[in-house]
Length: 244
Image: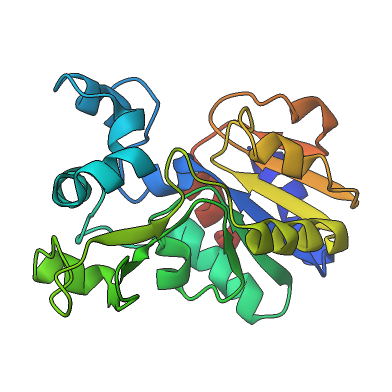
């Protein structure tokens, strides 16, 4: 493992324009359930006899906005979850000028909570909610603390600023992510299987020098990477930071 950590350190130290691409594994390290893994959020919802895709859809929001928000409170909003050392390491590299920022599949907002400023949230974020009727905005903390189900200002439906089933990804976010990938000299993937769109399509646009993948399970891009680490990412990053 020491040799692998040495390789990782050499790549990071030699890079000037790192871009991070993160998936559910980074959130799991903060105690947030993975959506599709065995025993994850998807299974928990299905056991209650509901379709997770429907409960996370624009159709359900339109048909039962209060029921939709009750679902969010029960399954998506975690007041006690905080950034872990991986989030903090990425934010530090950005602050030091070594990183162009983060592209993430996650909606928990923990990258921003850790201090990252340049975050492309492909599926939106639970850190922002807004009223569909009058566009009044609310923070995640306000929604949790007040257990908001409707807008206190207009009594209109409220929703998180995430991409629901039946909705399109934000074009500006996609363009920003592509711009990062095209400028990057190093791409570090953390906690993503890279099996689903837009992950696999976006990663294909990286033409820089070093592709590093840190993920417990193999990905379709492992064969193209300069370094692949199938291990616990928190342990890997802590070893990296302590490596002399």
